[in-house]
Image 1 (cartoon, rainbow, N blue to C red):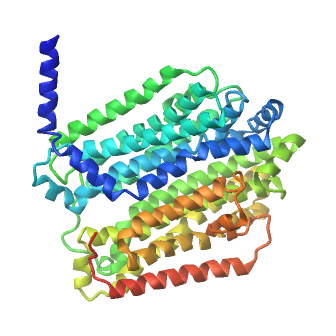
Image 2: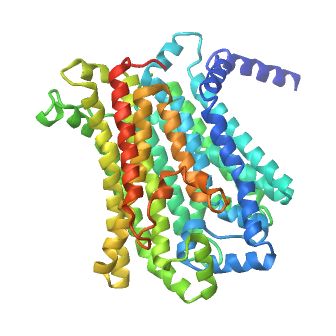
Length: 551
């Protein structure tokens, strides 16, 4: 036994002085670089469950009220698709049910963090510089996983401790916190594997986020049309696994083994690929380009189209499909609500006092507006990626002004968001109109509910553009943090009973709730003016600062 322990310790020490050497120093470097962003998303997400629990208690203080609420809401396919099944009617169970989709942001933050410190570093050339030192080949990958998984663990621990302190059952609270942590671990491991397959951080992010969205779509498909419990489809997705744990019921602790198994498989694949591939290469081959550029590609707008077209087409198809699905299920949910006066009262408490269908589409399009803002911010921040990677300098060395180069990418951020929301509005309007046999009456109303989100989206584009021109090192972190703040305010601001001053910080709070509300031009004009001023400030700052900017 002593000989085995000695051999294991020797092999472990050899690994960390060879393949994994320098991991500790890289962990400290990552923590130094993410000293603002990391605590921000950990604390904002970890304290959300106890806030929602307090809100649910204020709204439904008795077990009978909670049972009635759950029975009514889960009787319609629309809300089953959005929130899933609820297992139990205790305060803990209703809190876990209400936060079922919020775990998406844990997975999103985890996969983005891993890709940022692996493939993005390699693409920018910093990984090659570090590799010239006494750094192990797989140290960057292990360091990124350690920091991300550690942050997920802290997030889950704070969430569990806050729920226990609030008075919820210890076992259920621990299971809840652990479920959020292992969910983040699973998608961190997935991103680690995807980052080894692609040659660019943008492709790695796109594939990882697409798999995260597919996982959510499978959960929604597994819940819709199932009255008692999710179908077998929910066992194909981590979102469904969390449901099957029965967090505040008779916990199924063995389900956590699924997360551990998936994480171990992806991490093993990532390590194997990292050990065998060349630096800067990936498993997925890249297609060589033309020897000479075609005519339309010789200007900055054509180049921006070449760089942005893949993501724009993929996002557009996704929005069109999602809009069609949400528009198609709307009428069935509305009919169920109309037949149940109690459910109509619940819907009014969730979304407003206007027509049921109008309230539904106002909420859905507001959510799609937030998602479209994610695309728009990413398209705007492509400027920073082109600058840090060194690809902007050859373009600017030609007869291309900085403003013209920046405007070519910002055009895709501004017009691309319009294309996405237009596709979702058209698909949802057609699907809903066909289900009600009134395409002419419903199509325009649903489309207007989608397009009215644009001014708010453009404000966030303006924030990213202004930061890129004035404070480029903060452009990515602050830009994404602004979107995260808007998501938290829009989705949880009213349930948490935040003050009007806090709610008004989100530009989406000033968008009319179409198709029910009247269109007021003043708020929309102000949003457009604010976004225009921010973009102009960014272009002016770009003209005056050094290119490339360090950091």
